[in-house]
Image (cartoon, rainbow, N blue to C red):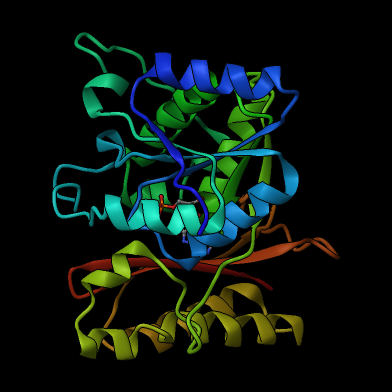
Length: 282
Ligand code: AMP
């Protein structure tokens, strides 16, 4: 039985711990999460263990990335179960700050970004990437990891934090991990816990439609037409589509049609009260 990770709540404790890791000559990988951990998160922890000698997992449901009508208060919180999973996976430490520890009285700074943070999620969640960039910036400064591991599940976020680390010289190498899926293709997400059995049975349509669109694009179909077809397929199952688009896989800019341009299909849709996102290379 693996030993439980050390749990720290304050920045002072975190710095003491990471200082001790560094004094041993260990390199540190940080895995930022909002908890309610599932096997997608565990794939990130396994990758972190491959790249660094010490793995720190942060668990923090970040209030500033949720909009006023979003699911912050009902977001699943399963701390004890999360610790068991992280122990089994061999994580060394968990950083679980309170909101007051992260944003003390008078907190007045926000990191806002352009480039990959523009459009897509930002069109529907205008507060989201400023919330993400600010908290990830703080986590990077507090933990000072060599690596930070992020999932491709949140593809735009992956590009945003990569840009953030470069732009602010945070010196953290971003390590991407492919999306973990259920057998029927549904991307694992803490929010899947909200789905009723009926909703759960139609949720894989997002992945299926993206897969179909990717195949069509590789077969020569126009990316915009393939994405529009995916919107139809997903809508026909009763979901409300926020977007399905084909973008440049690195910059997330609209496609120029250049030969050999790397393409990523990205989607977001509401299934009842649950918002699901997914993406695939085309
Ligand atoms: P969250 O707890 O949802 O904020 O996610 C924390 C990290 O886990 C992010 O880097 C996500 O992209 C990643 N993640 C969430 N779900 C998956 C998944 N199904 N496969 C791979 N990574 C994931």
